Image 1 (tube, rainbow, N blue to C red):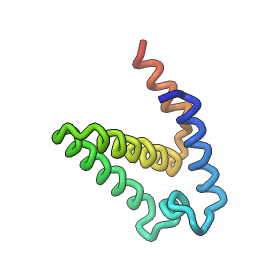
Image 2 (cartoon, rainbow, N blue to C red; image 1 turned 45 degrees about the vertical axis):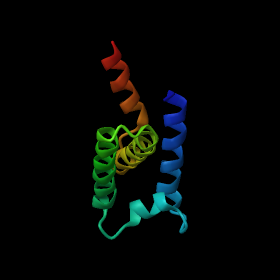
Image 3 (cartoon, rainbow, N blue to C red; image 1 turned 180 degrees about the horizontal axis):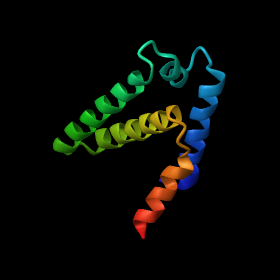
Length: 96
């Protein structure tokens, strides 16, 4: 995944966080009655679905659930005011 794609997706998430459009799933994660737990629960659910897809060697489902994990992870980062650049910096450091 390119840095630009992650930055673009994060920018959309940040925009939804600020503008809270009524018809936006992303905005609903920021305003849910469960608070931050709604996005955390979704992240956990998607991680479980990803693991099950891997267990079943289901490539298509792995890609789908992997995308869900990345999306919900970015939402959780945005909820905690962690910029995507911090994530990218950490990944770059680990790459060596």
